[in-house]
Amino acid sequence: MSDFYKKILENNKKWVENKLALNPEYFNNLAEGQRPPLLWIGCSDSRVPANEIIGAEPGEVFVHRNIANMVVHSDMNMLSVLDYAVNALKVKHVIVCGHYGCGGIKAAMENNSIGIIDNWIRHIKDVYRFHQHELNSIQDENERFNKFVEVNVKEQVLDLAKTSIVQNAWNNGQELSIHGWVYGLNSGYVTDLGLNFSCDKDLDQVYQLKF
Image 1 (cartoon, helix red, strand yellow):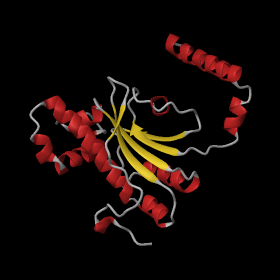
Image 2 (tube, one colour):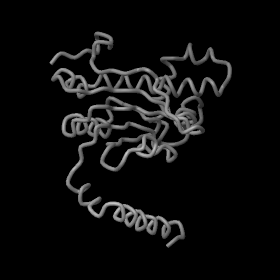
Image 3 (cartoon, one colour):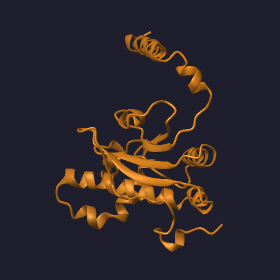
Image 4 (tube, rainbow, N blue to C red):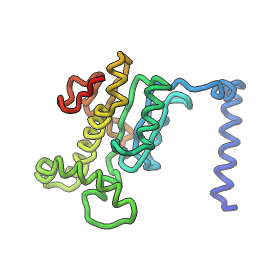
């Protein structure tokens, strides 16, 4: 076995020992079930650990991650996570969290073929097309990159609000709010983009479903 592999196994043992030293019933309590108040839809980037960023313990955050924190209406993985979080776990908040310096966003700004991921990146390119006049007007490339990260998060929050899962929860009077954040890799701070929904009244009428 490689040294790295041995190290992560040892780290697990130390983590368990530290948790049990603080609370001998820690894992027994976790095993009883979960009632997280939050679903986190984030990027797969290894530098963006959902629990650590917000100081949450295991059991407090239900997590779905993919390249560039996308909410794709035909993605059964994401929809399954969302459905379980909303309808079974009854989460009260869903956060879509992007991050500055996102490789998926950067790839969508370029034309290089990477491989099968090109098909996923195309969804991100669609977001660029929706906002191309605003983005192309930004001369500084890094500033344009950061803005693209932000508008992508906003589009994913809107796509989340358009889902039948979220709208059905609102229709049933369920307490559910969705939010858009961006995480700063170089600062550690999150920025709330101010796009927060708790009902469908702010969506274009064509997306408002009747149940």
